[in-house]
Figure 1 (cartoon, rainbow, N blue to C red):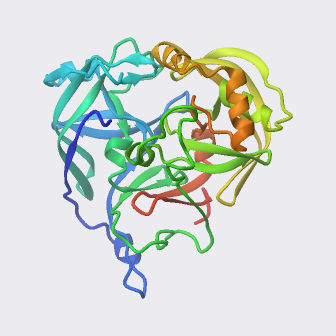
Figure 2: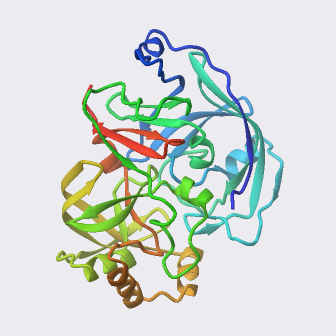
Amino acid sequence: MKPFTLALAIAFACFLPDSAALADSSGCSLQKLASLPMTETSDGTILVPVTVNGTALKFVLGAFGDGSITEKAAKSLGLHEDFAPRRPHLLIQSQRVEHIAEITSLSLGSAGGRVDISSLHMPVEPDSVKRSYEADGTLGSDVLLNFDLDFDFAAGVLNLYSQDHCPGKVVYWAKEYSDIPMATTAQIKWLGTTPVSEDHDVLKGGFIGAIDGIRTAFDFNTAIKRSRVHELMFRELAALGLKNRYDETSGMTPGGKLVGQFRAESVEFGGVNLKGLMLDVWYPTGLKARELKDQLISPEGAADIAKETGVAMSIAGDVELGIDVMRKLHIYVATKERKYYFTGANAH
């Protein structure tokens, strides 16, 4: 269930000369609506500028997760707050959300091209969520997946495009590219429980690839620096023939704790093949951990399910590809078409 609804009111000025250059002889064209500079913090987190009720703020880029505003920012702006629903729980890094803030306007971009979003409600991030950097909230999929997303890491910008264009006519920066469809609801589900809804699937945006030749479900996660695998997912991979063992380690990752690391010989998806990628192995803490325990899926049970289906798709979550992988690519997310397009980051 979405924690809020939003109404889009888009105001933009043409980008010249590159907007005009994105049309082809078939009459297809891409319409750029806004461009957001991406600033990387010392720990690899991506921040983007956001204007809330006329005040300039910095939000974490959480393009494939839920959006939020910090308790400090909500109080500073004097936002009206209502109590969050008790069921289902709204969680931010395994911390329960207690309030939902009402936002009159949220703007992305500048005078050269700006998107204005009116009347939305956003979860208030509890003060108990700890970060090593200053941020006023998270810009999530509940806002961003109303647009096509163009992650140009070489230029350091996230471009927002209109979803209205001809299918397959989006790679403007290179002649050769790879693509992969977002997984369908039938392909990505919480095994052993109820399949996710179409709505959740859109927000999830997962896709099928392989780790060391083993079919695996993946997600992108712009809110983590290092790519990671849940411990249950690792056991599923091992049950399907993964030969690697993880080296035990300790530390923290957003929403949980690290238990180890392992190096994959190959990570493949959509024509992309990454060699020797180091993946963190982690497990969640707090409410999220208790919710998983309630599902009564043991590590052994997760491994049995993987053997039965032939695909590692854990109830605990898919393999999350973080900024360490994404910065190597130029990624265009065609949200209405439900497809990813890839090239190398410098393929211009």
